[in-house]
Amino acid sequence: MFKKTALFAFAAAAALSASMATARPPLCDTMCHENYRDCIDSGASTAECAAEWSACRDRCHPPRD
Image (cartoon, rainbow, N blue to C red; front, side):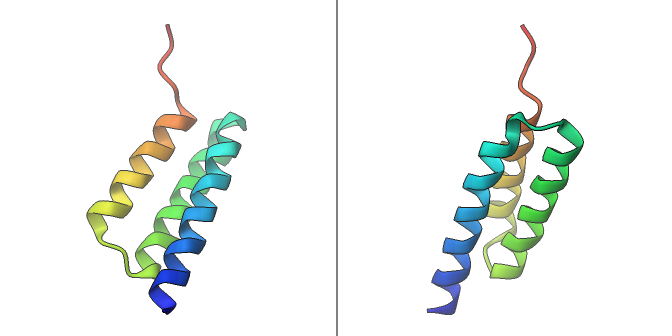
């Protein structure tokens, strides 16, 4: 039960970070790192957390045309 709650909290934080992706990149990068640490602390796999961190950073730094 705790693991499901922790993963839900992580998903909510990830959604919040997605909305913050339009913020200044240093703030966005910090949020991505915080979300990664929260993900690891929740007991999720390292690969899952790393994938979410990478996606978060991509949202922070979209490719320029």
